[in-house]
Image 1: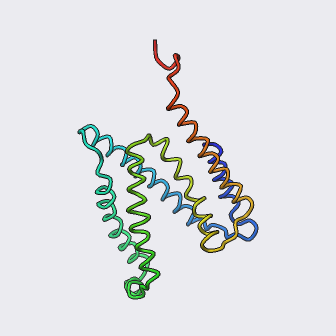
Image 2: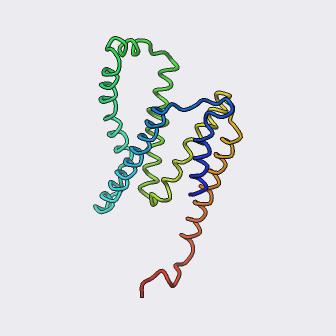
Image 3: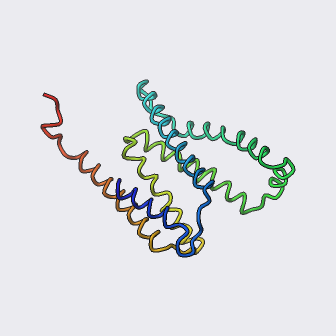
Length: 191
């Protein structure tokens, strides 16, 4: 995990170098806040999975994701009205075009519904310490997608940081697999 963390630091501190865009501090803080809430949601899913298991049931992950997706639109709409004039907000709705509809559909179905259902299934089946580190792939995936889809240039440091993250996750995953297959050592049980 140290290698993956080092890779994230390299990616974060390389932004703004060699002509790439600097990250505004507000955007960085919002991203960190998003990560904190993501972590809290992982805890909620683990607790819900344990509660369901204690009742002899499995967690209804699809229902959990669908019902929880009904919560954010209301406060976000209110926030939009607070930050902008109502006319601006309603003009945005009138200006919806095909790419906007595609983007919303992608976020709602592919990213939120399918992605969160699969993520929650993993969290309900495996220890959080095994699943959660894979969220470190988010910046790597974002950089590679920007490179492939938008033809953005990645710096050498971004490539090296991404490689560090992937290698760190591979090592972490392999060490979990080998530790779960190996027999317990005689020193692991109290005497």
